[in-house]
Image (spheres, chains in turn yellow, cyan):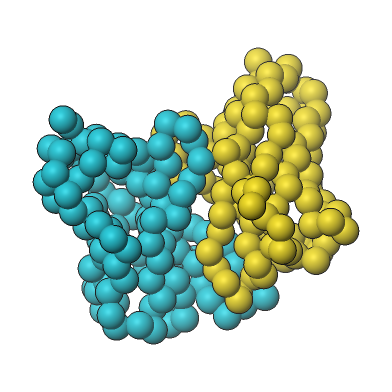
Length: 114
Length: 116
């Protein structure tokens, strides 16, 4: 079975640009969460989506947005990129929030803002 | 708000020996889960072990076991018979249970190096 897949694996963007990151969850998983991992730190929660609805949001500015599609895949959008947005962005999928709390992670997208 | 603290930024161990990684957390809730994740240089976070707060028995997975002390809010990971492939960042994580959404709160991690 395929695990959580994220694309692209690496990305370089210029300050002020916009970026879209994509995630496909494990088959059968209906919940997708996004995390930002700055170098040397643990991941920080950005969003959780379940059944196409936002179920949780971390302490991130409105420049960050996300959505989930009918096939449960998800996109994370970041507008007006700042140098501080440079990080590894991790997507995690789980069966459903609160039911089976194990989160399975993809390999992440390394975003560099120059 | 929940917090997770890992007080050991780096640790090293000789191959085949045992090492214990420390984690403390803070919460006022009773229904929660604790996890240890491993992140090798490949970047993918891999679930090592999980513990439900309502279970008194410590979780074990092959060479990995935890010492869960609920009153002390402590959740340490013991790795027995360390192998070179255990070299990675290890993150302790917390999640509330039973809700309509849940998020993982991570510690800052411990870099474990297994030496030959």
